[in-house]
Image 1 (cartoon, helix red, strand yellow):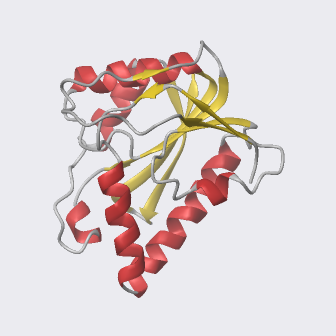
Image 2: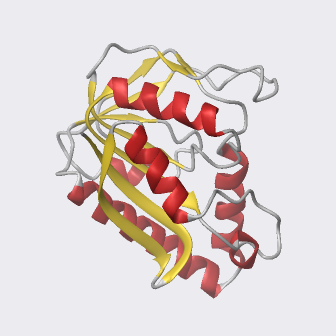
Image 3: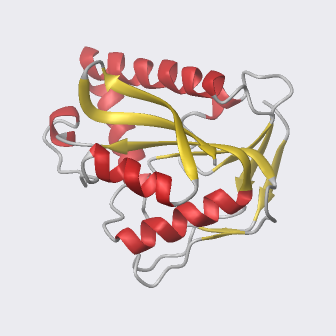
Length: 196
């Protein structure tokens, strides 16, 4: 495991943990689920390669499901949130990262935006991520039809891809890479973003 340091970070309650847990249950449920989980790891590995194997990474995935993957690079240093966010509604929570501008090479935040339906809130989050990363951001979004991949469980649906990408560009990022979990199906997509 690479060196890990903890920082103060205000994440929105439950914005990605429930979805992470559902994905883990799916991965254990059946052969297709195991295949999708393995493919997700493979695509995240490809995303890290696209981001030029960043050394100093802020990992905002609260479940830690991809932490072994992040640990594969021997010189990588992980920065982790100090504690899970306190209970409360998303509308009452504020998103903030206790680091200065350009503090890390890359922010790794799969599914951070799931269930965030307010465009203003997404823009606030993207601007804070853009402030803290020196170079890249790796995230993922459910684009459409997540119930098909979750055994019928209802998951939040992010806006259609062109709206997602417009919001990304407005916040000061450009898209370096897009990877669909299921080839040619816009179901769950990993994005590698670079500061403009």
